[in-house]
Image 1: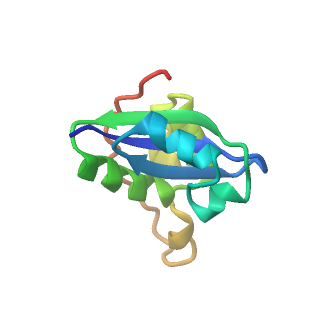
Image 2: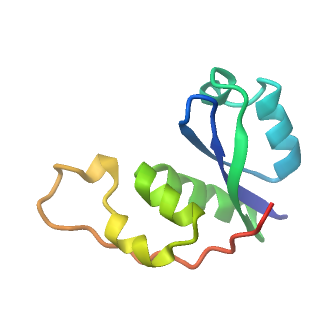
Length: 114
């Protein structure tokens, strides 16, 4: 079954990253205040970006990966600047944990226009 990883922009300018099997239904739930606590307090929301996967568990894994990214890295992904992603790979949780720089291999996402 298909799955989607998506990024919403909330009314306060914050981003929300989620995953779902049914993208349009989930977006409607967010708009109706039936989504996550983060979005229901920051309505309305706008879909900025999504990726489609063949399996929901892959979309969920991608959601968790992207949730750990900085705002700058999420914005690079959304504008399709994939070359910038490795340079933005330090997650907030990793800052101060090590003096070594972190690098990760980022898969080429299947970005679809909505």
